[in-house]
Length: 381
Image (cartoon, rainbow, N blue to C red):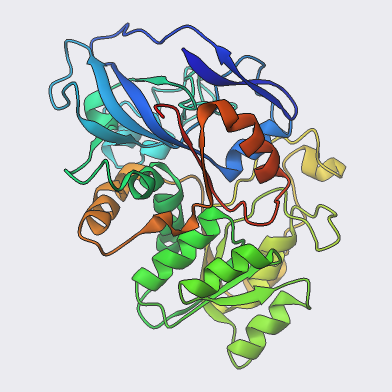
């Protein structure tokens, strides 16, 4: 089959790879109809992880069930499903508590909890930027989609990662109706976070970034854009909130945060966020931070350490939640919002390409070229 293979830093190709095979009774094979390029994929694409050459990328996947193992009871061949990026067994201590983002079984590394498709350090699972994807524990991991799945594929694929991750950020930040919320980052996850806050009836949603096309999308859904290349984002937030600061804040950038001049400062968004959120406010962090980053600009960051202004954080009495999203905690609810016409997360999609054009999509997306906000690949096209 054809699949998008990582060969090395900024070197991916669509190659012939072996088709997946069912090896365990609870497995299923999905014919991929939609798979996204995610901002997290760029960390690997740029060589900022230890992803080995030859791996198939892609953790935002949906498609049609093509084959099932003998123990699969809830899914059948032909079903349209969306697959959480978290690979989870459904039976371990964490999964039974709803913490599928930290499954204790799916990753064979005993030092790591949590697993994902096509992702560095997140288990051996092949990604879905391919014609076919093996899904283990298929009854647990495959979310069935309603009868409008085919016509709304660009919406439903967003519940594999981006939409629930944005929603998770607002949950960790404890966003409630009427709150003012500041979000750092307007990539697809930042935009989904703003969208989620608006769905929760937040009173004021501010989005900090410097890419005009992305800020325009934030404004289009009702958020207030803040361009940090025009001046201190903290000062701009304070002006909008009357000097009080936002009630809640969300970090949607991660460890490759950089200033308007292009210099990396992995602590920048976190420290600005602390100063942007009011005393006793709450913060949710879904931007990716890693324990090791050999390509980091300084020695601390290479070991996953940053100069976090904990004194200011403690002084302000703030609370913070962090970590990857447990997609299954939200995907049914978000699926139903899409089905009922209450949510259309595909507004972030700028380009839809056949799988053969995936390397081109990666190049443009990685360069943050204007207008490239979210790329969907269609292997079945």
